Image (cartoon, rainbow, N blue to C red; front, side):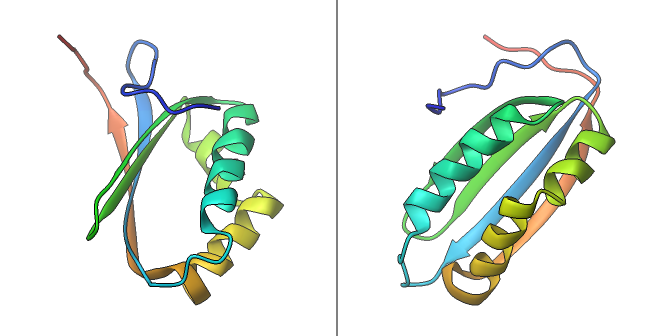
Length: 108
């Protein structure tokens, strides 16, 4: 799945998972795993889209879901669990996850 500038979501309400991270210097397999996670997430029931940006200091990825159950199922996905563990042990200095309910959206 190729990332576009803006995710195509549906009418609110829906949910956003905001993943903010700082990377380590270890790159061993990171990009391949990140691309695999986007592909897998896009196949999950309830997945609506994803947006991501990174500079030399900070990365922010926002995934959009139709329900809290869909988010929970993705968190428990076995391949995603492997990526989470590698992130903790190799790829990230630190990260935070925030889950928000989107009640309104508009764009230009």
